[in-house]
Image (cartoon, rainbow, N blue to C red; front, side, top):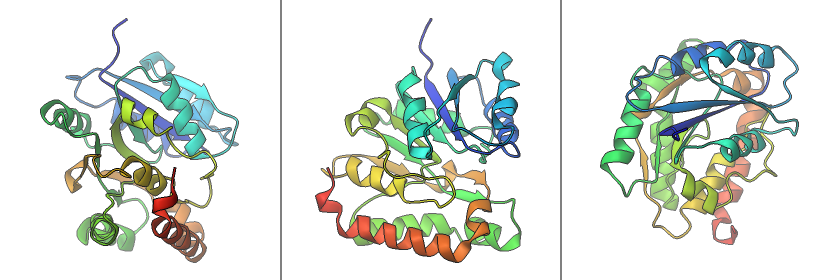
Length: 243
């Protein structure tokens, strides 16, 4: 069996209300490039596994990972992936119809590019989150500020494609960072390790945006913001000590 062009890895913890729409958007992609879909159920307590199971006839791989944490679930998906390009997508995200085509065109036409990413657009949770992320480009501005101040291109852990060789070289995500309820900066940790020698080529653009939800932050916005802010600052200030 020929390997697919891209492996889409979807970690899922208690995502019964979002996973179906995510998979609908995935299977609406242009079939110009072959792709496999790997859903990693991270010991969900709801019907996530059952929802994913209804898509087996479409050819998805459904993997169970009992150890908690999105970092662990993503690494588990990466280990079974067969493609040379890995695309990590959160289960509450939805792809625009031409998303994979755009991503694969970058890797095909720009062989030096090692990672492609774009922002989230929060379009499910009211006017203000959508205004901030869609109209005022919050994520794009934030990521460019991090680049300007610290020389690092950050990218969201739930919306990026990377060459598998690069991902494997740094050992994937740090599994000691456990993301389930509070979203810690596992994506920044990975970005720092990938770009430590300053030769790693990242392309972050708004045209690679995905629609997503604000729900985890919405549950406890002050706690979430403070925890992530201080964890992010600690990583950035100690980036030279990363392995």
